[in-house]
Length: 399
Ligand SMILES: Cc1cc2nc3c(=O)[nH]c(=O)nc-3n(C[C@H](O)[C@H](O)[C@H](O)COP(=O)(O)OP(=O)(O)OC[C@H]3O[C@@H](n4cnc5c(N)ncnc54)[C@H](O)[C@@H]3O)c2cc1C
Image 1 (cartoon, protein in one colour):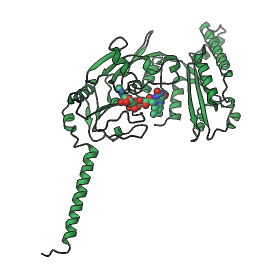
Image 2 (tube, rainbow, N blue to C red; image 1 turned 30 degrees about the vertical axis):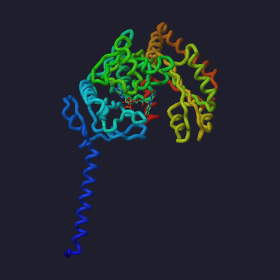
Image 3 (cartoon, rainbow, N blue to C red; image 1 turned 135 degrees about the vertical axis):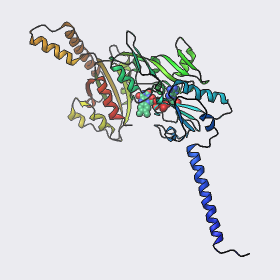
Image 4 (tube, rainbow, N blue to C red; image 1 turned 180 degrees about the horizontal axis):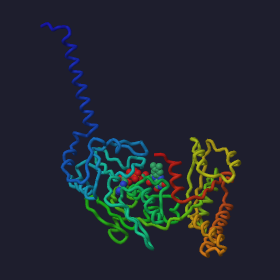
């Protein structure tokens, strides 16, 4: 039998095209998770929010950018019951099922902690069941969703002259995300980490039950979930302790090149009486021009000396300190000018504020004089709390 000479190559071409098509289709199927064995059962779940089976790639990334586990679906919950429904579904599938669930806050973890390989990622920021509720009074607190960002808690609480007692440096993190870790910043030496400043939690347990817990109620669950890395339940609501926000802050940064001097000063300040309200130390490896950015956000006490400080390539240790004041500068200026204009004595309360302010300044000067930082690196700034923090976020983290 004779075949036309072109027949074999044609047949081959068709075969190759077919292979490419099959490969392409399977890639599409894998990338969009259309043929995952879990997809059909998820589609039947009654939800107020919705699953997304297509746009899942963002949930396979985090700030660390080291691990990428593609989930089968991302749940955008509208209600706490949506979260309970998916967790209960996974529980009902039993231990043989490989379907896993991970809560994702703002995705700022470093090692894939908020990812779920072929599982379901719950986008906690979609959970806006109730507004942030501030409760004023002698022991103020805030009630907020586990997916709420700390920056929003701060903005809202400042409207009432209040602020969380314990913060993180960076506030574009969720309540659930930091309470699953610890939440540490310069207030922790006084108030403990953020997990020590929580009154109550609402949690979806591993069986999909919605449970309230606190020191008094379901104590084990409360202590397991706080700092529990998302393994003991999903925080859907938290009640967090607040305190009066200072009107102004004196913010100080100094540098050390000697680690022992740095830690000794830090320990000394933390154990001293009438010390700063915020004490935090961190390491700077000045390879990337970071120090220039760092400098640009502060007023040097001595710009000439500061410009002579050679730091390129050095490992430095930064001590960051803050002292809070409740001195309302505008009010004082108004009161004093008013009294002078009417040739009347200045209000006693204002005089008291002024005396307290100058005493605090003297205390700060005294404390600083006892430290052994590199003298030319002293940077001091006084500002209102919110302006100060926002400036810091945008200078240091542009995410
Ligand atoms: C730029 C930057 C600055 C940082 N600054 C600080 C700092 O100053 N102080 C500090 O302590 N930490 C800091 N961190 C670390 C940060 O607090 C943690 O990585 C935190 O987990 C991130 O919160 P997130 O909302 O992004 O959570 P994600 O990264 O989304 O999740 C983190 C973990 O919490 C779990 N989780 C998320 N939401 C919930 C929930 N509602 N219930 C139960 N589990 C949940 C996740 O499953 C995961 O295991 C910083 C991180 C970055 C990237």
